[in-house]
Length: 333
Image 1 (tube, rainbow, N blue to C red):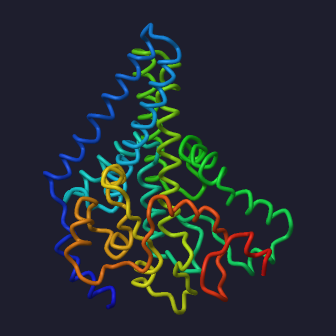
Image 2: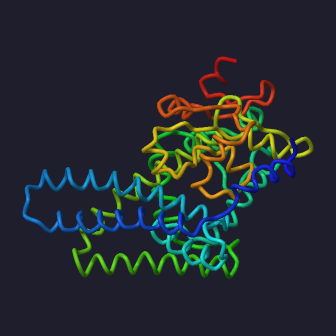
Image 3: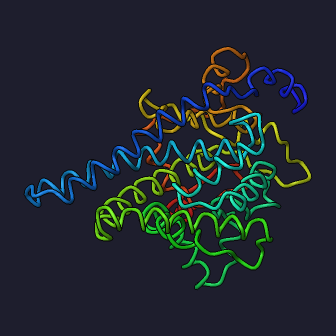
């Protein structure tokens, strides 16, 4: 089926529910704020240092998971599907953006490009993971090969890289950003600074670091990992623009990440990513119902939680065989 036919089939699910959106705001932000307060009180208490350390780690993990869920709500706002009102989506999008250290307008712009170019070999480089073909990699000089291998190293791609992206790079506009995007950066940075000041006045600046950094690290790492496994897998769809098909890019270029129910909640059903790419107007709370009720949405590739870890070893797209391979496979060819 073509894109227009799929849009007609999925149209009933591409509707926002004010009640469901408000409920998601409440069941996400309230526990997130409570965790912040409890973490701050713990750090100010006189309990043993080792108990504080355990508490900081535990609150950091739980708060980080909630930050991932907040980012999904942010993500829906960028697609203008969280509320019927575009103004409400923009306002709440900026609020969620402050909490997830992400400027709303710039991310919206880059992510929309991603939706329109995913799987297109001739239009890479916007809102995606840096991916080279085998021939492109072999044609690079030695130093650029080193840079690419460093970028694809799991410790950098999922460890050091995400915290730099969300903590540092997302703080400053670039020469490409327009006035609206620059304003979005300013709003986000001022909001983050206001949260810092509030924590400073109540618990102290050290508490801010011990509360925010673990949460941000967990959320940034998981967020990049989720995005990675949704488009980086063995039989992923890639094609040159002349033969690129947006429906194939959605159904064959995106995974169905099958997660336990609790992780589906924290990740806002983003694992049903092939459906999201078929119609990004479907809000997160309708994706699972859509998957169950609409025929023909069985994905080409289903990835489970533990089996997804091996995808971190995929590095290059092999155009000859139409699949992703790792550097170790390149050496063996």
